[in-house]
Length: 289
Image (cartoon, rainbow, N blue to C red; front, side, top):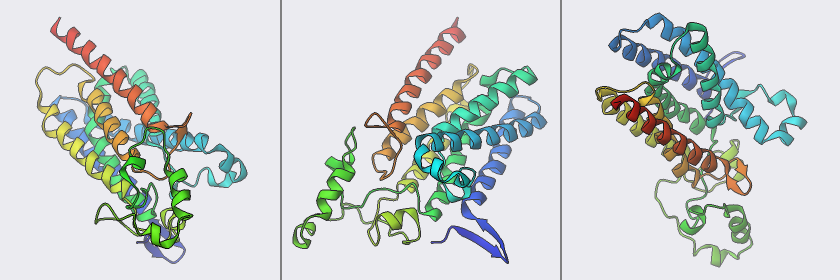
């Protein structure tokens, strides 16, 4: 497992950046496909995709930096080093929304229509991006012998339990068996391997990859086919599906951004689900009226 896909002399191509590029190109292709179905200007989609990805990257990075501010104040040169990892998807979504609103204002387009174009591509792109996280050995899960009562706790107690586990004698540690057979041991040079050397971990990034891909299939092959959709229908479903996925995978994450002793992704995801349900209902009532 190596974060570098290809090295030619001093030039290095990282999986992380490569996956973002692949997600971007795939997103443009899918977005233009939807645009053609709706007799929309496909050239406009290319311009929008560029704005959405740039604003999303900026938002995702700033969000991550703000939640890890002490580290980045001591290491300011690391702030732009996105190739080292460190992107927060909720910040990326917020950044993408801001970019969408600005683009829609300039082009005089309903931003919800642009959101519908982006919904499927966004979710597939997020799935592809998790391959980069896997190769970087980041966004990792807890050791596979962690009890489920510790994993599925709304107020994370993992590190409290893990410190207790480390203090146990070897004979008592043996009582904690691996709960799944697909744990991954990451290189010690990676964030996951340096935190948990030689331990099999839940591949939380792959869990999210699978869930996001399933979500993409639901949006692309089921929800997209629905007749008489109000603008924003696919977008709000994207937010709901991704938020549910994030709630599930956050339980398995070893490192996560925190908000008043709760996982920040849980708090934000629940808020986003409620907002999305409200607007879905509102659009349905308006569409019927």
